[in-house]
Image 1 (cartoon, one colour):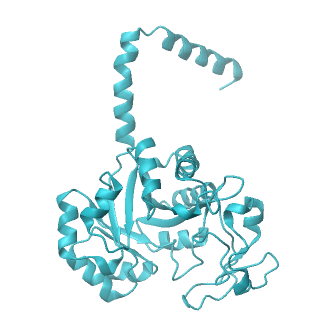
Image 2 (cartoon, rainbow, N blue to C red):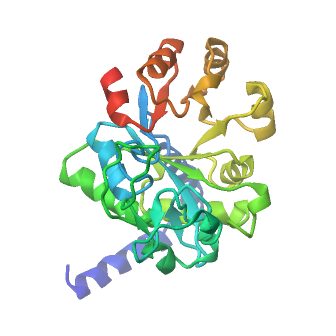
Image 3 (spheres, helix red, strand yellow):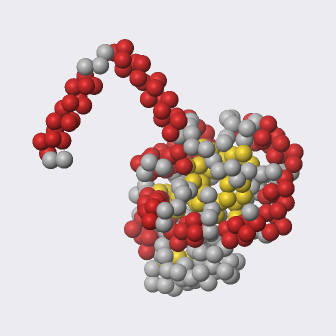
Length: 316
């Protein structure tokens, strides 16, 4: 469309909008809100298979190669962790600091144990964060991890890469399960306060047009509460690993989440029934053996998060 035609089209659109009566506008607003809610109500998979940090057991965690590995193995959801940099970029990494266990310096040297708290993500601009090497160091906790040099990605970049990968390979859309990595004692030191964290995160999600396919999860009830206030139609997952009962955790949260996500050892038939009675899905973390996966399926959970998508795929 040439410039003149674009201008004419824009003028027609403005005129059409201006000619509407206040009554017409008032009638359309609820319809638009309903359409928006419908767009955000994309149903979760009947059984949700989630690759933890992408595919931590097989590829460098929370990296683009790990997400692609999970997709290649048929996972319906890619799970990841979000932090905020000093210049307010949303990045995908689990720890508040660059972790010496699996990261290396920009020069490719190992970080010492004394440096484990030296490089805080929230105290560095993204340009500095990106320079650290991922996937170049053998990680003995996950010996099957493939060594492939990569880096800590921006959430926006990861989404673009995943969407392009799905399109290129003609694969079904996956869900994004994004954890806000925060706790009260870290506010304004290791991450922003909850309202700012949620605002920055959702600006990226909304800008990429993937909101119906996003779940926001957290151990930090505050970020979920902020999200519920500002984006009430976005799916939420309450992560738990405490001694409180299901009812106590829900009371502390103050609203009904989409998903209840306990450590897999906390799942019982009674818990699954209590969740289902409230129309809450149960998706435990992180089951890494065939025995645990089989037990959880027998209990009737609605999905499983694992470091080994290959193992989970074999059990389905």
